[in-house]
Structures are given as C-alpha cells and as structure tokens.
Length: 462
Image (tube, rainbow, N blue to C red; front, side, top):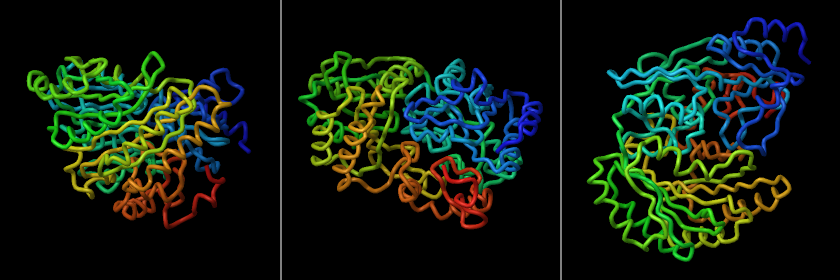
C-alpha cells in the first residue's frame, strides 16, 4: 500500500506528470498498442527528462514497487505496463538533434521510427530502424533492431554509439565503447534488463531515394513465390533487403507478397529487381523510386492496425525448404482472422557479418526470421486465434533453428529467453548480476541474476 503523502511528494518533485487511477488521463496513458494487454499500474510517471526517470526508479526501490518502462508501447508482449506497480512512461520524451557533419543523431526514447526518420531525412540521412513507422525506437534498438537497411548498414544496435541509462541503483550513467563498456555491450540487444535509457546516440548514413515497395501474387501461386524468394535471396547484394509472406489483400482475399527496399543507385536497383517483376507475373507491382520515409510507412504500417488483439510466434530457420513452405501455405489458408499473416525476413549482409560476441544480439549468420502474426479485433475471438497460432507454430518446429529474435517474443518463459540470446546468455546473466542484482528491472524478456534477491522474493513476479 502506498502512502498518499509519499505519492504526492513524488508528484511535486517531477517536471513531468504523475497519474493515478482516478485521473482523467490515466486510462489513455496505460493503453498500449496490443489491446490484449489490459493492466492497471498504481502510479504512472510521465517523464519530462532524465531526472524524472531517476526519481521514479528511486521511488519504486524505496517502496518495493514492480516497475514497467514504456517507450513507444508497441511491443507485442505488453511489458510496457504492469499491474499494481509503477509505470515509467517515456513517451513524452521526443527531442532529437542531428549533427549532419558527424552524421550522428542524439534521440530521446519516446520517439517513434517515423518521427526519428522525418528528422534524419531532412538532412538526407538515416539508420536502420525497423519496418513499421509507429514502433518506438527504444525497445526496437535495445532488442537488436531488424530493418530495411540492415543488409547495408547492420542492425539498429550496430549503429548505436552511446546511451545515457538510469540503472537499478538510481544512478544516471553513460555507456559507450570507451565508458562502461560492459554495459554498452549489454544494451545492444539485451533489452530493458539493465536500466532505462534516456538518450540514444546513433551513427547515421547517407540515404536518398530508395527503390522499394511490394509485389503481390495470387494465393494460388504462394508456393512458387516462396520458393522463388528463397532462391533469389541466396545471391542478393547488401543494398537489397527482401521480405516475403502471405497476407490479406484489400478485397479480403489471401495473397502472396514480396516486399523490397534497395538503398543503392536506383539504376542498378532497377536491373536487380527485373527478375522479380518478370516472375509470376504479379497481380500488382508497387515497386518504384520512393523516399525512405515512404518505404518505412507504406509497406507494413497497415498490416499492424491499432486497437487489435495480437499474439505472435517467431523464430529463425536456415532454409525455406518445401515442408516449411507447405506448412506456411496450409495454415495461412485456414487463418481465423483476415488480419493475421505470416512473414519471412531475410537476415543477411552487414548484420550477418558482425561477430556473435560483439553485441548482446547473437543471431549473426545468414538465415530467415519467420514471424506468425495473429491479429484480430474482437476479444471474444481470442481462443480460436491463439489456438491457430500455436498449431501453426507447432507444425513449424521440426524445421526451426531453436533461436528467436527477442523483439518478437510474447510471454513464453525462460527457455525462450535463453534461445533469444544463445551463446551470449551467460555473459548477460553476469552483467545482470552486476548492474541489477535484485532483478529490479524484470518487466521484460527477463535475464535473471545469480546474486542478490530473485524476482520472486520481491513484490511478486510480472
């Protein structure tokens, strides 16, 4: 039970807002993108700066409160909000400063990809940041950061130069290649396990108009499309990133699709994608020269509608063999919600050449990330949609590598967290034990420390 005067004192010492369940803005502030998650924090701190984060962390420690940290609030697992604890809301923190000479960006954690990209593109610059413009930069980067530019420039975490981070002891630290180097290693893929990042510094790259968009094929051609995609991606240059999948067309019918972004010279890109345009042929060819902002928004934003229930399963595979393709086509044909889809992301190029131990993100080899997105509007339909997803995922297991991208995890248990970090897991445990020995930050894909109190010894588990 929180003392009213203690809570009031916290509010008086904040530059930002303190929200309680009786406040008019409370329900909107606790709402996140995946509406399957419906939790009620005891206190929400809407931060106006790093000092508010420090005060919130210290208050939660002193009052033995479970803490959740919200950036963009787009993560499927819903760890941005907790029941009965304190929610640190970073979404008001949207400042960004671009240095066009050094080609760097200083960015606060409340920014979405679209907001970040608009500022960098004003200078003809960009860095790898996801594929859905309403995603928050914070959670995406801390988990690794797959995106359209990863083949040429690596992941979001590969372009991270430094962070300011409030650790579990309530101290604000800087981590970089020359300061708190071990912590810097951990935040590049280790998620929110080590603290609350209040500033990200990114390396930027020259990115002008790109060649991109989507090719759409009839569902009857899905097997051929996926086989063609597998063959074609075996020889693509770093500049070309390609996804494939089975989704629903605007007329409500299932279709197969290939989406691309080519960030090299446009004339070379046109020659490179010519076989894609000739194959099929497609029902619709939406590929053309576009701004990077257009690519980030128009390809996949509509596939992730707001105010929907979401339940995902994902993992890596080395190949798109015929059994994998057969299972994808079979289950896509029986999906209970037209909003649901299955996608394959090709992991290659610069992102795949980084040594496994260089960052906490360990998946550094050419492979395919398979993502099953079950999405539906009506909570009454949850049981059949979740069951479909689980059966689909079960059918894929004989062909999967056992690894998974941490940003695609729902609440799936310790074994799946270990799978997300593979050979880097024990090093992450040691880092967690150093910086967060009581598992204060545990509303995440949790890496449990081996010293101090465990999460079950404090205020319950999430």
